[in-house]
Length: 287
Image (cartoon, rainbow, N blue to C red; front, top):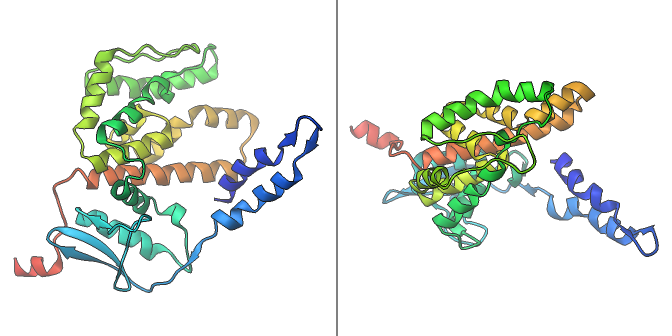
């Protein structure tokens, strides 16, 4: 988290007045206060977490108090496994509550509050906008080691994807990017639209993390693991690190954060797309 903070503030701390050529000391001071003002963790105020079931709807409890969304709406979930996973997120917090690590809670809150008043169609179009700049569709323009690595790692993924969805996609080697037919876009749009509103939120979260529709769908189809998907999305970065050296704490933290986000997205999609629900102990005993 510290890495993300400084990645945001350091470029701004170099802000200066072009007219005088002097650094903006006031702006730098304000920016350096950001971590204390926006990234401070809350002290844990509850002892136990749990879930309540009412007519097939589930709510999260913190010491018998019902959890609410940032907008104050009831935190109601249709999936019992998802409710259990959210409760586990809250239970995993120790002395302080790091909300930035609670991706399932954030996804549920966004789906419930819908702060931007988006429809499912809006979300699908947002996801599809990443296809034209998909990571695996841009290969090195030079016949070098990086290009050979991309062919070795990305081509099998692309071929599987095209066969799985019966579409045609070819990677580009120039800045103009790939040419993607309307038929291909329609097929993928129809596929994404077949999921419910909550699941599509999960797809959006995963695609934003990887910057790749292809890798996200391959991961949700269980063709590749979360770790593999993140590694493939950072292939050029890994290649350059191998040549110029690796800042272990920086690269590792970034990859772990991406893995956490993608894993949460995949789980969120599956738990909102499955008709299987966990039975309570009393129901199991009665059966």
